[in-house]
Length: 137
Image (cartoon, rainbow, N blue to C red):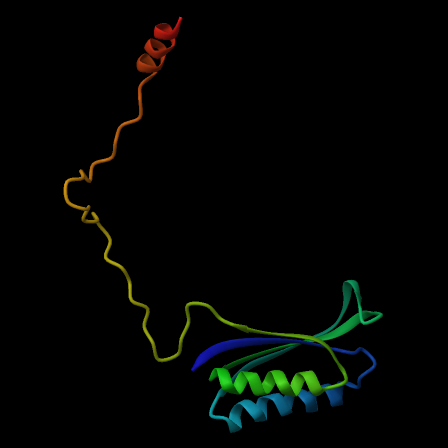
């Protein structure tokens, strides 16, 4: 199972009770498929930077959940079919996988291929650069 964030923008003309019912449908879907619904933030009305479907405002809701990818594809399908949804985005949180630990790489000197030195090559000094210029004149 993986953590996800779902940002949904509803039409402003929708009643807040209707929006809460639709959010509850998403949460119930996640729960019925074995996922774990998390925090739900109702951000309220916000003005868009540009018009979306000839609208200048929307009602924002952020939903967090831990679920399988197939569950989130069902959430995607549910949101596509909803008429009052202007836009939505489902984002899988990177680097976080429930039940998995991240394997860290060892820190320290890395073994180099045979025949190569692992020491850094020093940069040429200013004296060498000045000598190169005088050779060409």
